[in-house]
Length: 199
Image 1: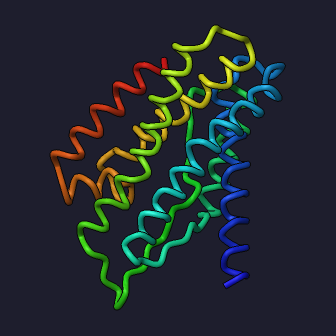
Image 2: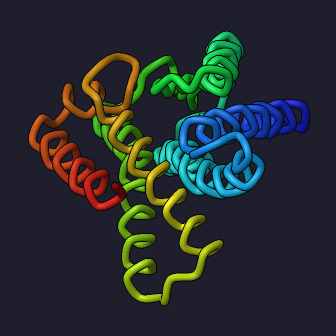
């Protein structure tokens, strides 16, 4: 049990580091600003990726399912390689394939409602964080460091929500559309609105 938890934490940390660097390179206006961008991106990815995966995990456990995050190391290598190329020639490309929460049902069966709620929990968390950040940005006076960091949080959360809601396997959007097309349409529209607010 201890080794499994330690492995999961390590997978999350490695994925967090790689994604933070990838988003920082993509969002940084120049190499000179890259260190600051990495700091902002680390907070943004922490609020988006980590909370997204933990939401999947905790909702799965609420349905008495076994769940743990597993990094996809080939995907992380490709993510890192594209980020390094992006840093060198500034391509408008963002690729992120860090891994996913793997869910195990008893006797190999996962209840369809449980599958739907688990799939929804990740993007809904990102949407909630994105909207909350937008409200905070409206409520506080602009300050260079805090405002920039909050924009990173909002943009990364909105991007992860939108991307994960695409109706393509193995993304959350495919599972949601399969189980509840109406809920998928509503969530996808909301994710587009949040993305628009983040621009």
